[in-house]
Every structure is written in structure tokens, then in C-alpha cells.
Length: 409
Image (cartoon, rainbow, N blue to C red; front, side, top):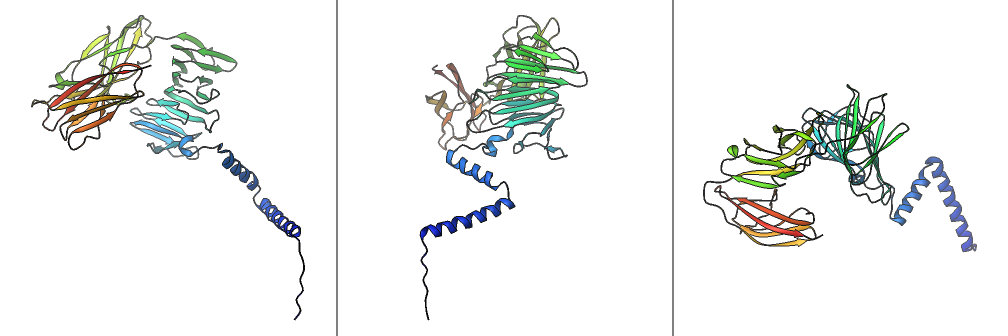
């Protein structure tokens, strides 16, 4: 038997390997033309750590509040389905609210759109990217929508709302309300905070706080000032009101008067988006007393009306809690101390085992078996704050404590 040996250099081996790889990649290219671009994008994203597409949780708009009947029709569907908190929204999706419905939608850049009752809106844009300008937009087909923008990471980010043939480009840290009524052919955009630029054809109009544009299809656009809403005074936001007989207790509502106003409308609801109004009162002054409330949480706001019958936007919304005081002995409630963590206050104290506590309108979920508790408030604005702690034990007894907190600027 004879054995023949052939010497092959490393260079020859390398050439054959490259040739085989070229043939394989060429075959893949003919079969899947996009494979190279996808591969290169993946490699580039891994190296740079910056992908054009962020996670779905960041890019998709979501519902953060739902009241009453709210339906969604996805862009690739012809069927309306009930909305829930797991529903994500993409470009082209439609949202429809019923007579008792309302929804608040938040986008990845922090922009929120509050869709009022009997409205139909469409998500027009939802572009998100890491370290890149964002762009969100919603179209109002019919109804009313309030929107608010936050502090954007990129100054080139955009948030828009369109109605009929007009588009309002909102600036950051701004608020506006948009109304569209196709039946009466009346549309308007009102800025309540910050500023916006309204474009309609070749027209460009800048709006600042308490200015609005109104128009009809085919008619010229009109810019005007609007009546500012009142500033609420009492009950203080998140304040608990303790009384032995809640239904007979007269809650005193107070707000700062508006110079041009001749009357005001007070609304009280059991929901944050006022889909269930329990009291609506029209008064000429800046105070009124209302009774007939059951124990529970309530939300209230006020709008003003001038001599020309023009109504302001509603004020900010305050919340109060009506607590029924027990007829038995009061419960034990002791505040041991407070500590400030930035703009968040920590409250330490002791109460009776099994008792329920409310601090600044928020329930305290973690009370130890011995009655000790620790609670962190929401972020507080700079200045002095009064933290109100209200408790109720199993016997029906109640207790109330107040502590003062100063948040430095």
C-alpha cells in the first residue's frame, strides 16, 4: 500500500474557506434579499447600544384611566372591542367613547390625551426612539379631547392634535383642549398652559395661555382670548372631612373669583374624569355649601361664565374624602416622626391593629400587626404642606392628626 501526501499551505485553506462562505452568502442573498440589512442593523445596534426601535412597552400608547364604555378598533380590524388596561395603541387605531365613557391615554414621551364622552379619535403618529426626537399625534374626528405635554428629552420632539383641516403643534409643558362638532361645523383649540402653533393651510397662529382659535370649514380662522377658570381654595386637595352625619354635613366649596365672571358652575363627581356627576350647582358668588353626600371619595372642579355667556375651561380638579365619625370612643393614632427624601415625605407612626388609615387622600396599605406604619407621600411641590392623617378602627372610632412639612426649593 502506498500513501501519497500533498502539502497545502494555510493561504490555500483560507482561500477555500472564503470561497465557500461567498457561495453560501450569495445563495442566502438570492433566497432572502433583506438578510444583510437586518444583520447589519442588528450588529450595529448591539455595538452602539442604541436601537431605532425601543421596546413595545415604551413605544405603544396605553390607557391609564378608563370610565364607562370605551371601545377600540385596531387599524387592521373592522371590529370594535372593549378597551382595557392591557390594550396597546398604534398608528391608525381608533378610540370611541360612549355617553358615559372617558379615557386617558399616555404615550411613551409622557404626552397624555384625555378623551371625553361621545368622542371618536384616531392615533395618527407614534414615533419613539432612544436618544432621538419623538413624535406623537392624535386626530379628533368628533368630540372633545384634553392633552398635556411633559418635559421632553429632545427639544425637537413633537406632540400634535388635529381637527378638521387644522393642526396644533404643542410645545413642551403645555396643556390644551380641542373640540370638534361636525354636525354644527364648529371647531376650536384652546391653550390653558404653555403655548402651541396652529397651522391651517398657509395660516400659522401662535397661541399662549388662555387663548383660542375657532373656525368652520370654509370660513376664516378666528383668534380670541378666553375666560380663565377659577383657582380652587377649599376643601383642600386630598383633604379628609370627618363628620358624624355625612348626609347632613354641608361641605363648603370656595374658589378665587374671576374678574369677568358673572356666575360659576360647581361639579362634584365620584370619578376622576367626571363621568358620574353627583352634584352640579350654579352660583353667582365664589362660595357655596352643598350637602347630601355619602361617605367616600369625591372630585370637584369649577368653571366660570362671563356676561357674554362664554364659559371658561374647568379648573384643576381637587379631591376630598368624606369620613363618617364613629359614635364610640376615638381610636389611638400617634405620629412618631417625619423625614424628607427629596420631595417625598415619610410618615412614621402607630395606631391600633386592624385600623384603616388615609394620609393625604391615600390609603396606607402596610400596617404592621402591632399597629406601626410607615408611609411615603407623593412628590410635593416646594413650600409648606400640611399632611393630614385620618384613621378609623373596627369599632367605628376615628382619629385625625396633622403634621407640617416644609419642602425646600
